Length: 336
Image (cartoon, rainbow, N blue to C red; front, side, top):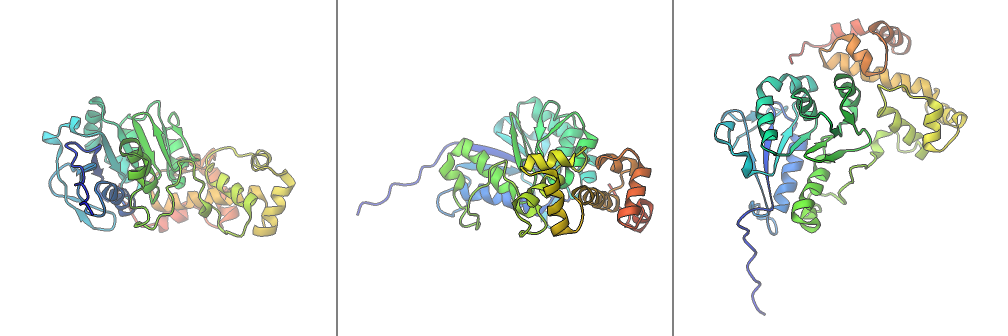
């Protein structure tokens, strides 16, 4: 049998990525994205950067600590960086939205310089908040983690949000909700440069059946897999519209049932009306924000579609039996 021909050795990878993890970045999307690159970068499982290549960027040579304390070393710093040597700059968000936005003073000049030189920007997890704060998302649409949609719309009302997407390609801006969606987004990005077959390489090794499209609807968005299709869709719609005026009749029409049928489903499975469930969902989101951010109560009220902090307080006492002030007083102090 004749020997196999040697594997090609491309002089230039099909795609070159500059990876920028922010301080306290999340390991899950970072590792998911990077490992997908690794599998597609070489034949078999040799981990050589042949078909796609990446460089880790940091503001200095000290390395960057993840939110879990794991430190990653960096390959380059901005001083002698030539953005023309790369095809994308990929930014991985910090532990909290507030932390990502607070980093704008340090990171915005780097991001703006990359944009001026025509380098497409990719925002993973809450890095879209940093790009928006840096003024780099005007005229673009973004995909966000469902928990961050209301907060983003409140902070940046002129930037379009595609709340139904887990990742979004909008010209030279790409955004991803984070988590394992980083794998799906990586597959789509690699397919555009390396071909669909190479982009899918290694998915079985990662125990991934199929890459999900951007418009994938999370089954886990429903609290109970036994709720049924209509109720699960209704809850998913509610979660994506926490800060919007959501009319229950229109919601029922959207999922293909009548208004009374919608309420019957909620009463049968959850013991409450559809509107009451949506109200509690918004208040639980507000409760999480009060305990995990330093934003004002008025700003958090706006995120969930309420006119004032007093409206938020009244509804919280009515539905959750507590007040925003009490929740904030009990929350640990957090820096930004």
